[in-house]
Image (tube, rainbow, N blue to C red):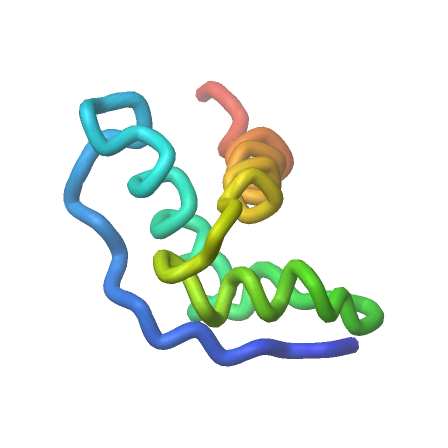
Length: 78
């Protein structure tokens, strides 16, 4: 698989708060840093957007990824 290095701190804000999109995308970095997420093959566009974030023209793809990770990696209710 393909591992990408994302050196970003985990945000201390709610994913649904005032900084919603920014917080959602930044929270995805924690999953990469902990090796819970890696790519089975290169996703050049996505990876370049993630590594350049927040200095990207369009952040919809990283935001969609962050939303998918929230659903896919959600812990079951106990």
